[in-house]
Image (tube, rainbow, N blue to C red; front, side, top):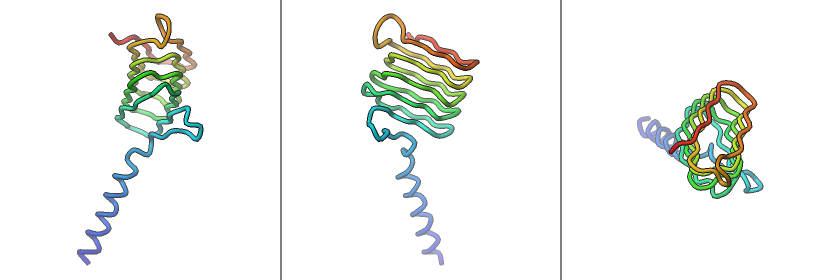
Length: 121
């Protein structure tokens, strides 16, 4: 009986290890990165792709250049190394960007309330 319990526990642990990164995946077109989940702490390489954030209460860091970052989830803290466009569809997100992909600032479209977007120096 003890062997059965240990085997099940091992399988559960392996299953969680293999699915832990499942909430960061490229879409079928390969042109965007989709982040979904709750209470995530992730660092992702953008590689010039679009990003869709369907996560809530998460801390997300994006390295490299992101094209458009669309935030559908709420109460996230997002740091962008380089970005062209930020679209906020939900409330209470904090977005910090370091460098605009072109020009002095990225294009920002805020369709909700309580969002904060600022440059991190």
